[in-house]
Length: 279
Length: 50
Image 1 (tube, each protein chain N blue to C red):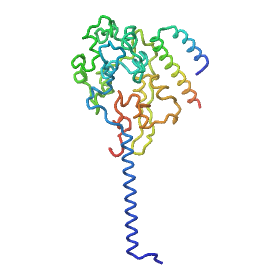
Image 2 (image 1 turned 90 degrees about the horizontal axis):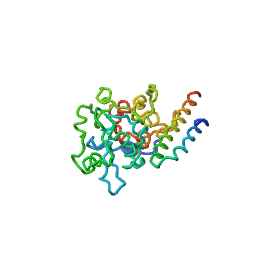
Image 3 (image 1 turned 120 degrees about the horizontal axis):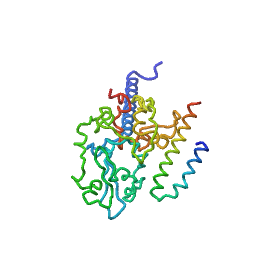
Image 4 (image 1 turned 180 degrees about the horizontal axis):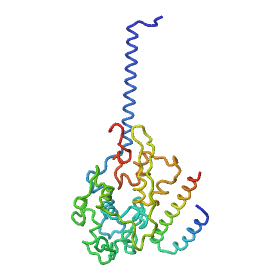
């Protein structure tokens, strides 16, 4: 037996359809907003500023803050060489660089000692007593336009470009850069590293493809000790939890990606093919 | 970390303590990384055997 009249049933159906549409809309908006949260902000517009580190000086008599460009140094050295052998920390203000340590041959002074020869040129001494204003300004260059010897645009003109600046991997493959991994007097001679196999990591979200992790490339540039165990503490599968939250927060992949290595919003560099909606 | 490697690392600490502050910081950092990596490698091997 019919419990209500036909017009009333139609009205109820419409109400049901409206509620269903409302639920769909809320679900869609929630997903979109969560996707927005997962996605990091874009890197600086000027690729020359990507990976730039400003080192505030401790001394009141110093010639000003140092501007360190990762793009220049990473074209010549592996990450491992500076962050392991020389001992530059991966986080701000953790290294404790001083003019005195540079003079003693630590930190910048490990290479910038006025004796070491790179690419046929003697590397200038950092924080040397004989330095003049012009020499100091090569590093202590914040707010001093035109004092730096290398400019990003000219230096990287012949390098292959990616979405956000230089494609360093392609530049190395093309033989345009040959980052060195050994410094006489600082590095320890080691056996050549065995090739590490790339592997796949399941993505935590259904709207992106799994990550193809290039273990070989990462280990050539970083060695083992830059990532293990401090950034990725264990080799047990499934123990280390990855998420875009931790990456955006500067942990896990975000320890380098988003700061120096290609940015986190370059999805398809890790998630093969990028997000599913973009394929 | 195994006892032998741990004690080898620990044996270096008094020598590092004798350095000035800057050297101490650099070498303690390197030692921490080496120690961590060694523990990691042991852990990986143990994990592979399982």
